[in-house]
Length: 159
Figure (tube, rainbow, N blue to C red):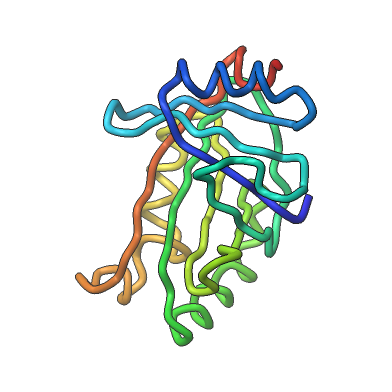
């Protein structure tokens, strides 16, 4: 898979969309926070079929579909210098549960997608890993990032 297309919406609307679009490999993930919408991922590796979706090119890693997993989406805006530091740290991390993708529309926007068995595992990693949260530039108020935690459930992978 080289492309990751996604859109956001209510659980009901995205479930209906999944039933309507049969020819794509769609995955629906449910937010842990009530402040987030469901996310619908298109893993078909084709053109974005969502009217209001966003698309990323996968730079490294492989997305794995697993039930009862936590998927952490971290959206990062990195300038040229920050990208160098970040990509070096990513290459040194050797984590098999991480996918890095770059926006097709804005090459300074990145998506770091990680998969965890328990939320606590992510929180432990996020507090100890230099890759994402403890870098000096991440503490800069001008730095733009957003992290949201989603969960796969039994219905996440069915058509």
